[in-house]
Length: 115
Image (cartoon, rainbow, N blue to C red):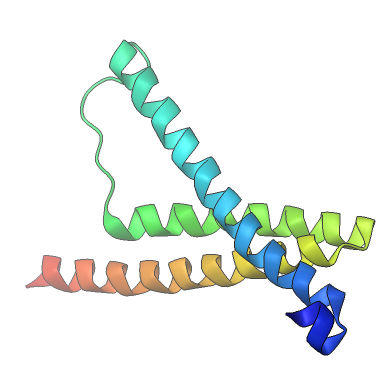
């Protein structure tokens, strides 16, 4: 719609990058988590029990997605790509949202511990 009606092909590439590359970052995280679960089941890699708090999981998600977003921005600048620019910006926005949710969850967790 952006190309025939608005005459702005860059807008299409920006939006497609935002949709596809943000999803790619999430799929990479899922792949890593599946690989870690399989490695844990094999034994020897992790000993004892392991649990993550919600705020910690969100914070690590924010960092991982932000790194992917920064990589996309570097590629966007180096390759003058609207597609990677859209992906980088979408990932950084998602990372910021996860970071904020992490801060809220941590405050809630600390308040619950005090009560």
